[in-house]
Image 1: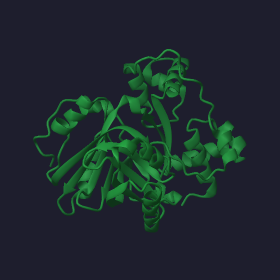
Image 2: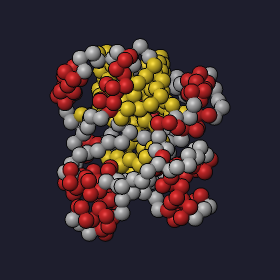
Image 3: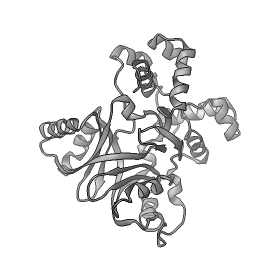
Image 4: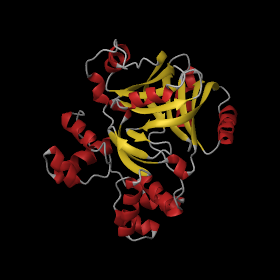
Amino acid sequence: MLDEVDLELVDALQINPRASWTALAEVLELAPITLARRWQRLTDAGAAWITVALGDSLFMGTVVEFACAPGTAKQVAERLAELPHVFTVGVTTGEYQVFALILAPTLGAITNVLLNTLPLPEQVTNVRSHVFGSIFGGILWRLGVMNRSQAQQVREAVGPPPRKIQPFGAADRALFLALGHDGRRSYASLAAELNTSPQATKRRLDRLYRHGDIAFRCDVARPLAGWHALALLWLTVPDTTVQSIGKALGGWLETRFCAAVTSPTNLALIVGLRSLNHLNDLLIRIAREHPDAKVVDRRLVLQMTKVHGRILDDQGRSTRVVPVDPWAALQEGSRNTPVP
């Protein structure tokens, strides 16, 4: 388990992932070098990490579920986790034992993935998909261990959106991919890889961040922070309240993913749990606060194989990175030949 200082450090970086150690030292009352060393220890152990996410306007997605032959779900999940446009993969209870969250830049690219390029291991016996547009919540989340005053001190003052809106271009994509392994990479390191200057890199990153094209997230090996399980819920809600209920559920502390989907159900929700009883509490809360919402299917997530580009071990620690690349979905291919 992480100690209280580790938890506060992670929570601070979830609020402001690229904050300087000097700025955090004033709030956490530790020397900057001490914080830097603690963070290095956490990242070396795979216990915490920082990465980058795209804004909702730049991608579409689909939740794909796979029914697998007995005893093969983990193998199927590991195969899918190697794909860069598959950003999250988990193994669950239920009829469909593996789910994968897939990103692509357009509906046409999503169609290409579902019809042509998604590899189907021979162990897969059935597949179903649920396309989504925007995500209501969960991409950015917090442990919530810091008090309100501390959180306010750490929170970055983000300037107004840039006056001149520029399309997300090839150079922006290159910068996003360069941040895939480490969202705290220095401007100098990024500039060296991208063959530009640190100043130009900082300006580009600042523009993308203020416009909402990218966001930074700090994640943690969740069992080490007291979040011992997850659940995948499929809900049906009235079409007139999908947005309001989705935003409400997306704002919950437990929410790790919430999106409106096009399928027999119309809302997907993944929640973090401290215990199995916690799930019962959440189901009661949904029924109480949103009586029009019906939980059609509920599944316990037995293991997360990949979370936003990070391959995880049994304890939720990051072991390596397959950087998220939604544009990989544009590649040509065929799924006609099963993956052995």
